[in-house]
Image (cartoon, rainbow, N blue to C red; front, side):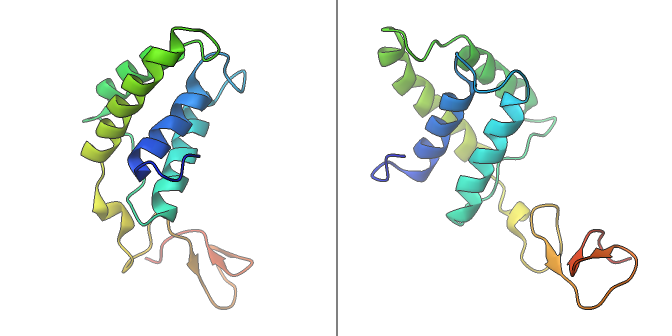
Length: 130
């Protein structure tokens, strides 16, 4: 996915490809898109995208513009670049390094646990310790 582009633009481009028409799935395109974006960002050492009440309205407005984009249309050639830059800026402005805290377990960082017991399955801690 365009390795010469900045990370935020690559992640935004992937999100647009998932969410733009025709969509990949009958439902769950937003979730799959956010999961893909978060994977790309975290893999590169950036914080994942986390939908919050503070960024929700802007996220759904941007997503509505993307959903109306027909990827195979002539107009898409001109719209994709602007949308990519807009979404990349949105992702960058809404990044929060707290979601990469390596010192404590979080929803994005599985913790490997020794042994077995409540909350442990196959050596992976499913629940944070009390």
